[in-house]
Image (cartoon, rainbow, N blue to C red; front, side, top):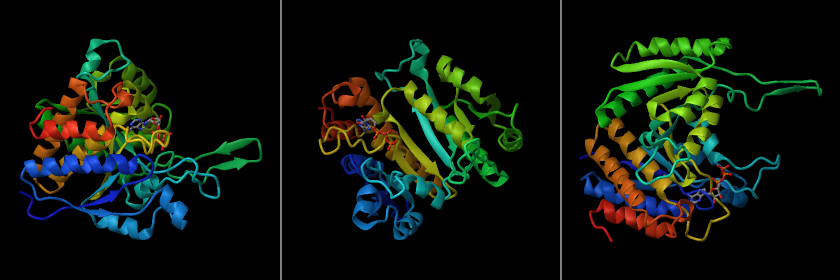
Length: 367
Ligand code: ATP
């Protein structure tokens, strides 16, 4: 049992954010209790578009500091299209947090659960189970507000790769592959996705990958050009384990990857830094369905499962890994039964009844 009580910072967010956060926390709490771990303490922090409309601040410094001090951060969706900053941009505190907390590894697991539809006709698509690790603080986004437009003739942007961040990123990807190998009982593999044949910065990126790979002899490694990878992700995505790539390539490939598994309502994610991490669904605040109680809570619940597994490693707490597995298994059961699915997955369940179905399967009761 974890000796100390872990504190989780919670950003409930905008739109459907609070609607999916509450049932997700109920599922997490039930799994933690069943696994015999100490209950979590939650610290609710203000941020987001509604908060900005009230106060003029989207991500208060006090919220950043409190989030930093927590053991992990759970974040629901943030932002509302009609609430914007004076320059017309949307409120995106989730991106602000990435930079403020140095969350360099964006983790996007792509998995087909039993009963889940994929647009790929090949039956092997049912075995798709890979993780895309997107560097999230540099690459083409490092200088994202500093692009220069020279008159109306030319524009330039700068791409930046640093050794310090790349080493941490690759080490994270290799450790993730080790963890997946341990959990799945098969060897791990990391594929570096770049454009090293054309750009020096990517040659540098790849050479650091190859250096770091030597420190993980138990994990297979290879490299791929991003254009080829875009094709392979459609033709044979089930062959990959962990992919690691630059920020912009990761941005594009993660949407391609999400398209391989259908609904946004099922896609969890994590943004990981040195000893702090944010767990959040890939989808936005879905203002078109907010307030109706029909949002799919499963991406938020699966993000909670990722948090439990990350905490298990960070705090050497195998009971939290057991809790993570319980949550994932219960979600898989609900998906394969197909009777408690929300509208985005073709069902008619409410957010609450879908989350309750996960809860009852978690607790061994099936209604
Ligand atoms: P953002 O730019 O903030 O990521 P977005 O423009 O990609 O947001 P979302 O808010 O993710 O948009 O919504 C895209 C579509 O997916 C909407 O029709 C929304 O209703 C639907 N959607 C998103 N999340 C869910 C969910 N959890 N359950 C059901 N439908 C969802």
